[in-house]
Length: 395
Image 1: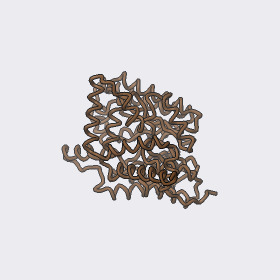
Image 2: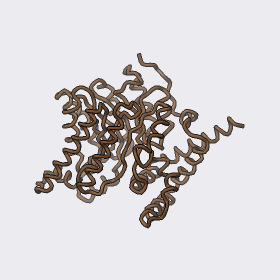
Image 3: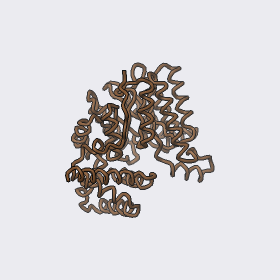
């Protein structure tokens, strides 16, 4: 029987148990900077310029932004982070965060690196998932043409076939390794192609266990129905259905493209609608537990608490491997560590790659923290409270 637990995400002693006083002070400085929009934009520009002119900034980045949000420059570098998270019953998803150069050689290089993450994950319960973006494996322009029903030329057809082979190779490798693999969601104008690739892989590799998971961005107003429809197809065809739920990451880009091309934006009218559909999707997945395996990717405290309630009401054990909570490394430790402390399955996305090549990721992370309503302020407030709590305990 599942153990009923009163979950609190406010226990700062648990949230920051892995952080020394020195690390906490470093976090204070990072989030204090990230609270300042101007400082964030200027810092990103200066860092990119420094790398462009070969100014020796790598050491500084490793001690600040890169060190906080990334596990290292290689899979091997990430081992320390994997071990530290495992000490608190939190799993790791090794997330190769280098953006490709848009040619066949770079797509093959990315595929080979993700194969290494799958190999590293095999047999290690501390690394239960691998992950990839389809745009790391092939051209989004070609996927856009396919989604729009346009004819590909012979060169494009070959490239698209190569893309499909790379996706299948990764999913097959995960199947052989008995690990799980997440297919990230991307922009709406080629997401249908990604979905088709994910569902083809599910039908091939999810007959016995849930290996392949597709991702659903609930800031799209059509996504809840798309999720339900995909689950119905999986049930009809007899394969296990893997769903990773997120709110979404391309809102401004989506709205701008819809406006420029004169079609209805796929984005929800407001945040409340995204929250409503995200929470409804959680309930749908839990109501269908046994056929649906869920990864809930969220930094929203209310949604995470709702999922704990749904799990307990459904009498699902906290450590049942069909339900995972996921957050990004370096963020929302109050959520991750408190949930793990209560016995739930929690994983952190741990980005890695050469510092200079991970700059686009770090830039997005910094800008998202300043743009997400209250996110960096929330992190900053929690850090300040924990510093004050430790001072009061020691005095």
